[in-house]
Image (cartoon, rainbow, N blue to C red; front, side, top):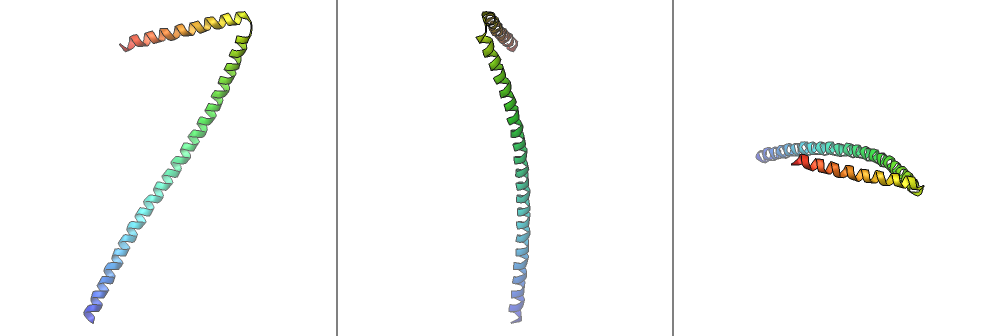
Length: 109
């Protein structure tokens, strides 16, 4: 009976030590997951702030573009002198574009 008691006692001690080791392992994993969840939450908040900033930038760009389109439309609808000026400006922009294209292609060679 004494042998059985000592044997049974040592099995209980081994199981208790194994449970403690597994509980510590689980606590470590839970702590790691908690840290990871916190990092994900912080990154999501940062990305939301970034997207909010982009939204306001797009709204201001949209306002600028719509104002430019309105001014352009007004200029096109107005008299013949403005149309001639618009034609010259357009041709000048096309020429500048081709000149820049030519210069960049020469530099890359």
